[in-house]
Image 1: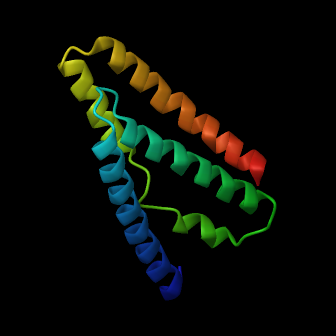
Image 2 (image 1 turned 180 degrees about the vertical axis):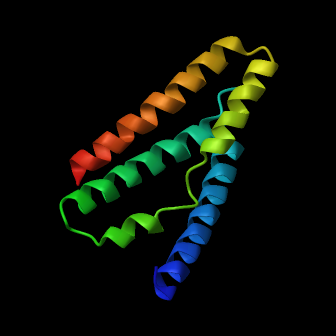
Length: 117
């Protein structure tokens, strides 16, 4: 790995984390329901972007190193924590819906992104 690629990965990770924080804060300010919409939406967008990058890479449109630059935005660990919190708080229906949707929909978004590329 070159020094410039390492710097790019770090910079993109920081930009992704900042974008995640901004999106999360904005959605949480508007959404006051039990379902953790902010994390779900972020993971769907991240899945779509990952699919686009994978599709572009598969079509030899972008450099193999570009796939390393898409980091810091998705929030899988936050989704896991929110899922456990819903379960611990007895929100069983929301727990099941959120867990299933958080696994299925981002994967579908990856497929859509790949198809769009």
